[in-house]
Length: 117
Image (tube, one colour):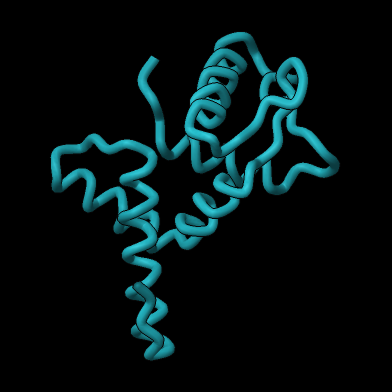
């Protein structure tokens, strides 16, 4: 299965919005959708963005919150994807985060005058 970065972003938003301590990635979905969700949750765990609490229940890690915050703005996310497409279409999650952070820092500088390193 190919990694879907838009789907990963969607899962992060769903995890953030979930109530309580834990997020069940597969409950209530058809088998095909559940497989995609579980696979992408495993990728999030591999990247340290989510943690498997117990048999499919997950929570965001601090790194997961940082990743989501870097890509929260739709304009930043679109510019990040456009940059990756221009560069060949493939990037690691870490590179996606670095590009999004770069755009976010630019936005902050333009709006506030504060330059972040």
